[in-house]
Image 1 (cartoon, rainbow, N blue to C red):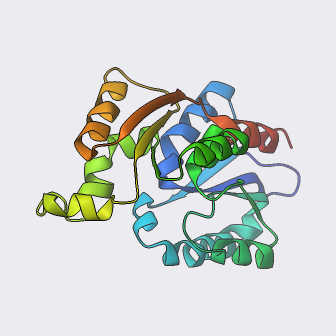
Image 2: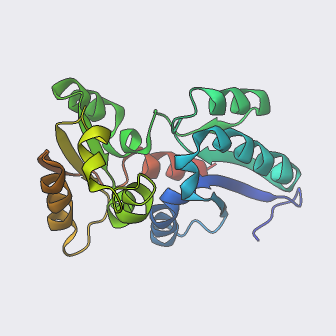
Length: 203
């Protein structure tokens, strides 16, 4: 672990596991050796009431070991509970209500939401784990007839891609077709995730 004259590790990033691949790619590409990462399970998105306590536990466990701590989560369905914890702990996080907001940038996300409120968003991570994180937890593999009920308020699927692999766009299109949604693809890159982590690593 990189250290400075205080004897502490300079930077700890407490991150959602859904961002692990993107954060690892950014670290490699930019040589951010001083940036260490602790990821919480992506499955916490299915139990958002557990996110804030889990983040607090990692903050308190590691506060004395690092000069800087930063949280790579959006609100992620915590209803403000995460922000309350971070305010008490004096820690910043990424902006936005959901990860797709900071990938798209708040301005572009606001435009998408205004154009169609009933939009379901996919990122690279959610696309590649759609079966595990959406289909099976909702029981749609066992009861596909429930699909119409779960997604009755949605009309469109937007795939916000960070680093697409071969076949990803076609796979997203198939998911949209299976749900009866209009489909839109947007390449976002890493959006504000890359911008904020670059600023953090430069401290």
